[in-house]
Amino acid sequence: MSIKSFIEKLLSKNKNYKRKKNIQEGMKDLPIGIQDFKDIITGDFVYVDKTKPIYELVKPDKGVYFLSRPRRFGKSLTLSTLEYLFKGEKELFEGTYIYDKHEFEKYPVIKLSMSLVESQNTKRLRDTLIQQLEWVAEDYGLKINKDSPKMYFGELIRKLSREKNIAILIDEYDKPLLDNINNRKKTNKIRRELRSFYSILKELGKHIKFLFVTGISKFSKVSIFSELNQMDDLTLDRNFSSILGYTKEDIAKSFPKRIKKIRERLGLGKKEFWDKLQKWYNGYSWNGEDFVYNPFSILNLFKKEKFENYWFESGTPTFITDYMDRLNIRTTELQTEVDSDFFSAYKIEEAPAQSFLFQAGYLTIKEATENSYVIDFPNFEVQTSFNKFFLEAKYELTLLKSKPIRDQLLESYNNNNIDDMIEEFKQAYSAIPHQKHVAKEGFYDSIAYTLLLSAGVDARAEESTSRGDSDIVLEKDDRVFIFEFKNDKPEVAIKQIKEKGYGEKYDKKKFFVGIELDFDKRNIVDYKVES
Image (cartoon, rainbow, N blue to C red):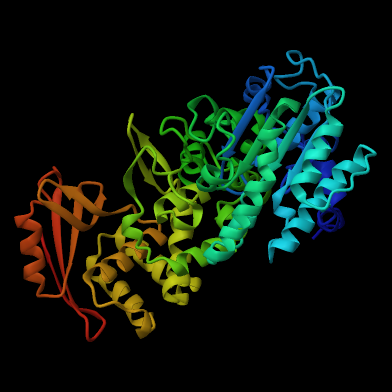
């Protein structure tokens, strides 16, 4: 190694050196983990301009909005952008869409993050609510003596709005509920406290120019904000479908040199790069028409220059694990069609799995009609990561961590090797603790289906025909594989495939796979493939 190369290697470990090098190469730093708009702008980080939809929100004289989106999708940055906009700090917005369109009049701002509220008990909830309000009061030089969060909030609103109406921004409104989702009694107490706290927003609505509330779930909005009936829910609003997340145009405009760099590093052509990017990180939609990329995954991809599961691996919230432990979820039931009020008709702790996982970002809308939605995994990253996590959390199938079953399943699929695929299923069933086994055919086909999804195989479960639903379908190139699991002979399973006409809608070479289960042996004991 030359002296120059050795020095470069040492310097490359220094953050300031890497930052200067990026600037020299025409690449601003990536704002990973930075949620403050001012820090991004003054720190010369990349800012993907989302001020066009924000301008549409602030144009009216008064706005009261709610928006649900998954974690790490830019909710906090959006509220921070609104904070500096209402504080009149126009210089921060130079070069953005909104810069020469908005008047940037200065207003008092109350910004609360409910992720900082502690909810071990109602006393701690009240104390930490007041603590946040005190921080705001101190910023404005106010002294308030109230011992209840609602009254403190009300007095703060009154005092700040003496000269002009105020803007109120509430981030992660549902975090205290999510932290206690497994304890219904406790959740009900927290809901009552929060309903009382937020009720002041209606009582003092005449003092509020702008209100924006974000969270992961829509469910508890129904009960917590029931009095705020004028709140405009943007969650499924097609006009704001891209307010969070990156569009293809956002990425191409904001990261041209990083795109070039990663393409050269990985040896990808232009089309190959965009196809792979879409497969891994695109696919999130809240109207079934407009699809966006996960911003957290995109930023990390450009930082590490390799395709990995960034969003999911950044930390699965405890409430997801708790929720899955409590409910009897089958992955074969997740990809489905639901009616239009399915996402908001429940309290969060009572919501069906599909509705809950949609709010949390593990499912998304793939198609929409006037009265229904088709929901599915958004992309390869979430599909593989969620199903791997599901098998580990629910069935203690921890051998997946070393990837052998998943890798071999994918290889078997790519090679059209049904024999090896069955062997991987059998190995997985053997690894599940006996206490977790269920003597039902649905248990076994659900495990097999989840294994396939975790391996990145494009599998479909319970595909409907006019005479019934097939267990698993694998459609690949010029052929289709139809699996049927039975606590009976393989011939019986294949007979059902034929009698129900599961393969009739496919104009491809068909392979019927009949699998015999033995509930006592807790595994596959025989199978047959018929072409």
